[in-house]
Amino acid sequence: MFPTPIDKTSSATRVAYKVALPVALLLWLLPLLAVALTSVRSSADITSGNYWGWPTSFNLVENYTAIFTNSPLAAYLLNSFKVTIPAVLGAIALSSLTGFALGIYKFRSNLFVFFLFVAGNFIPFQILMVPVRDLSIQLGVYNSIYALILFHIAFQTGFCTLFMRNFIRTLPFDLIEAARIEGVSDLRIFWYVVLPLMRPALAALSVLVFTFVWNDYFWATVLTQGAHAQPITAGIKSLNGEWIAAWHLVSAGSVVAALPPVLMFFLMQKHFIAGLTLGAVK
Image (cartoon, rainbow, N blue to C red; front, side, top):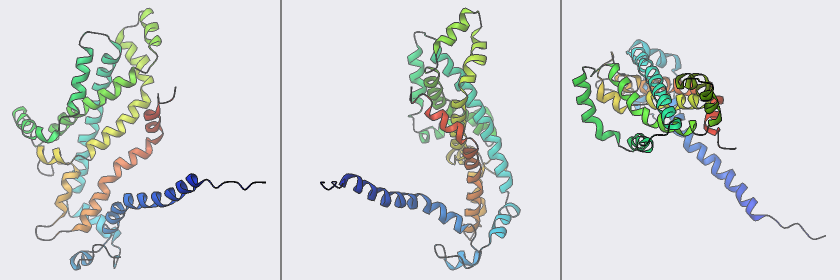
């Protein structure tokens, strides 16, 4: 019997996995762990410069209670829901209709209109700061949650239309043709035939858009000012004092701000994964 040759490639791959996976996981979790650990530090640790060492005391209840009692964080959190939920619903509704039109109907400028939606995704949103701000002032919605809702619906519709159009084109067209032969109107075809088949895509897109809108900081500071309109991403800065940086409170506020997208992802995880992988394997 000859000795079995050693598979050096497999051995090297296993070593790479054993080394690369923990390192990648550590690099990914280190900032999150640092924020979580800072959120339970005492103010004495922050004052003495103990940012990275082990906390001398854990002020979990005190810090997380203070961010709600000593600051308008609850109002900022409510504003985030007021902005995010209508923006998600509006972007999903518009993109479903536009995706249906671009995916089902065949007209001369179909591809051109589709490219317009795609091209809008490549425009750096920073260069739109001044025009969008001036437009919101002219419309009378500046410094209100309506400015953020309208902008996010407009900005997210391009990406959502790209997603929906490509998804609808993978659906069996025979179902739509059969419904048309039976005399069903296009609106009823969309509502009763296409929309039920789009549920995995709608779930996946809802999670993505919810995360994009909720985590927005740039437009929250450009279009709004004050606790009556700003979402939580912009309101966290109010946790810092005028002369003292209360990083333990800022970290606690950041943890609270990150919870809704994380919870939504875990609640919609099954539908999110199904929506992303549907159509990948025929």
